[in-house]
Image (tube, rainbow, N blue to C red; front, side):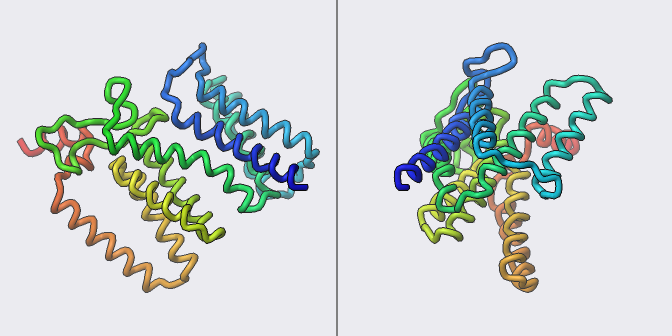
Length: 274
């Protein structure tokens, strides 16, 4: 019925909201012993997935590739505990593996049209980070939101870099927005909704201003794989490689290389120079 379908959309939107809010929750926020607010949200997310799994009485099939992947990964991590002892980090990984399995089972029977409601809350994450870069909003000793460089008369490229609100710095933020870029492109390709294309372009811009080399590399590799799988045209792939290579050379030649180098890298190169 229409009411049941609306309830399903709201539940999917709620799940997306829990994850997206955890991504804009600063590290240490409402921390209680070893758990903080973002962890609490993910715990609720996992419990809702578990209850949904039980409610639908899903049957585990050992022949299913998804079950074997998550099961093997979880068993490997459990085995590592017997070898190296209990580690909080490993316990977290086991928890995330179980959550990953439950989420995979949850989305199995959902349509792309339904799953777009899971993605909607993440748009707020992108817009919030865009606002942070636009107004250079920096928090927690210049580590959260926007990292300002404090150059005299800065240009667009050396005024700072985007760090995000999730903690762990620009590299994690770059990885997050890289994933969101590809997910939005997927939804655009499936639903032909230009709104997702716009959000994908916004996320690509956010990846750029993190100045995370690893994120840029993963983004380029992802596009190469997409071009190859979509077009199956090696000639176009080579042209794309040449274009990006020349563009990178032009970028490095035109702009200050400090935006791509860590402080330790610049110090090391300075010692070599002297």
